[in-house]
Image 1 (spheres, rainbow, N blue to C red):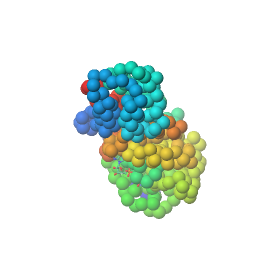
Image 2: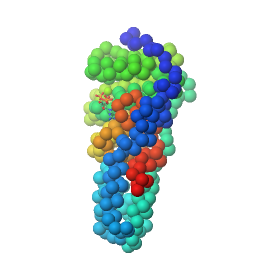
Image 3: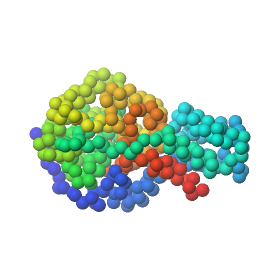
Length: 338
Ligand SMILES: Nc1nc2c(ncn2[C@@H]2O[C@H](COP(=O)(O)OP(=O)(O)OP(=O)(O)O)[C@@H](O)[C@H]2O)c(=O)[nH]1
Ligand SMILES: [Mg+2]
């Protein structure tokens, strides 16, 4: 069997960290999880706050058509989409029309509307009642799948769970190598196949290994693909079938990794993907970069799926359980200073 032995076990939670709650030693050392979240969302936060503040040159401002139009423009720039921006504008209209308002009043309504539009409970991975929880990770090329798998493995490891990774992206040798490096770094098992081999066979062997070794978590990497690539989409079905033969309820989760920097177009394209692949939740990667945080709004509106985790960087600790409240606080971080 072409899998690596388990690396030296690290059960020190403080050392390994807990990426789900953002309390890792690494996270703290890089300025604290909330600070990083705020930093990641700085661009949107500045846009929301600075631009909205710019609408208030004077102490107060009359809520008239000009104001509502300018506010709409500011909201659209956060990548939240025209529909939600119009909804917020209409709320401001309903609440304040023809009144002179102060910035804080407007920001308060904008924030609570954005919170409503994103609303969902926190949704960590749903663990199997017994036996390994099998998680398939899917998405388009380069969205952040492999890195997110490393982050999830790190999170579970920190919780004291044993993890097996399946290197199901057999298209590229580099993909297997990338996951192998992560597995060694994190200290978890990895099951690999031949380059160009059948990903379903790797998935089968990875789940079989998780069963044999009593592992609690098995995470399967897959090659990037587009929903229009019919054969590749069929391959995902095959992987599911093969896993289901070993554990009838598996895969317990199929996570769709979205690239937050892909903007609204990327999001819309992924919708069909999520339906075709039977996804159960979203990991929104790359929120730390040039992404605009407003993008969570169309994701919540267009997908019938919860955002489970968000990616805030390239290291294993840079994953956080998605919390609407924390996220909104970070989006409006600047306004609290005002
Ligand atoms: N800044 C930042 N970079 C990220 C994040 N997640 C992934 N990346 C980077 O995005 C690039 C692609 O990530 P991968 O994890 O290889 O993406 P993938 O979906 O597995 O890519 P393919 O296997 O080629 O389809 C890498 O350079 C990662 O380091 C994130 O949350 N923040
Ligand atoms: Mg990959």
